[in-house]
Each structure stands twice: as structure tokens, then as C-alpha cells.
Image (tube, rainbow, N blue to C red; front, side, top):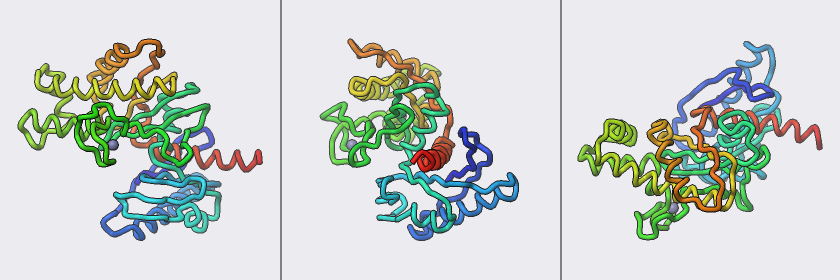
Length: 296
Ligand SMILES: [Zn+2]
């Protein structure tokens, strides 16, 4: 878990990390979150001379931000945790709850790689592929909280089975995990991962170039579908695979450009905030809560 004290303009005042300890079960994880937040506030009081005036928390899985409920997270094993109410009771301040990717996207859009962009799409390429649709300083959650799930756009109908039940979803072909799988098979080294594949591409290994280009082509196909619908000004790519830098971005820009016809090419840029995006975004959600309360 990453946590931070965040100033009004999104300044990172203090950052801390703590083990999630998911092996101890869902209730223990929730208690760790509450205790971590209380300790963070105490740190602010002691070292910054100020107490936090609101809190934001971003969690994975299915999140009902309106009701403040962490509905489901397979990796944390929780169901229907009233996290906003629990944290509000513990801290005695207003609390905002958000979805991890959308919250990270909010930070990237407002104070990171998409700064100044009115319409952006944030796509982290990690174990899976998710997305956050940024419109006018906020993230579009959709009618049911499921907007932006670009990883489950089908790009190859005859492709590999996906955990969602479809076949050939973008994340089965272009996530860091997918590239790891493909490169472990192609290189014959079961321990080889996506970062090793990127290195092999850089040294001109033709088998690595094939694996890499395959993923880039799938990614470009999925992104073109998304930008045809959304027409973003900036496309922010994050997650583990984006750490390959220009090894990813140069062929990706070319592959997107090759596919578009009438669509406008967005700026395709790497994420800027790394793994602090989520907690910075949670801080922004907290500040938004206060400005909404004042204006209401
Ligand atoms: Zn899927």
C-alpha cells in the first residue's frame, strides 16, 4: 500500500509504504488501511504542524464510489466493505473512495503526463490492462462504474481465452503478463519476463522483435478502437510495459498512426507519476470533496 500526505495543488508532502498483508485475510487488510491512515495523519500533525482535513482512498476491483463501498476485489478477498464510512469513523474527516486505476488516471491527467489536457485516456499495461477516461478534469466512471475497461476490447476474436470469458481481449495479448508469457515460450527460458524481452529487442534479437511487435500491433488495434470512440488529446501509457521507454513508444506511435484514417493522432506519452499516481489521485479526490462541500 502506498500512502501520502498531499497538499492543495497535489504536492507530495510525505510518502509512506506498508505491506498489504493480504494473506491475513480481508478484515486484517481493512484494519491495516484504517491504522495506516491514522498514522499518516499523526505524522502530519507532528511533522507538518497540520492535521489532514480530508482523506481519499483508492482500491482495486469493483468500487461503488457514490456509496463509498469497496464491492469486490479478488486479490484482497473482500466483499461489500463500507470503506468510506469506516475510514470516516476512524479519522473524523470527510472521506472519498475511488477505484485504483481511475484514481491514478485522475492524478496523471491533472498533475502528471496529461497536465493541461482536457480529454485524455490513461492506460496502464501491467498484469492486466485497464483504462481511465479523463474528461474536463474528472474521470468518467460510466453508469455502472465499469467505464474504461479497454483491456477487454476484443482485438483477435480467435485469440487466447481471457479471464472475463471472452477470447482475444487486448490484455491477453499486450499486457506485461502477456508479453512475459509469449517471451518465456519463444526464448525457451521460463524465467524470462517482459523486461527481458524489451532488452532482447534492443539488442536486435529477431524472435524478441516478433513477440514485441505482435504485442504492439494488438495494443495499437485496441487503442485505435478507444480513440475512435473518445477522441482524446493525450494518450497516457503507464504500467510495467511502459518502462521500456522508446522501445515501446516509437513502434507504438507508428502502429497507431498507420491504423488511423480520419481520426486525429493524440499525443502518446509515458505516464509521469509511476506508482505514486494512485495515492496522489486519492489526495486529489479528498481535496475535490472539500471544494464540492464548499460550493454546495
Ligand atoms: Zn477479457
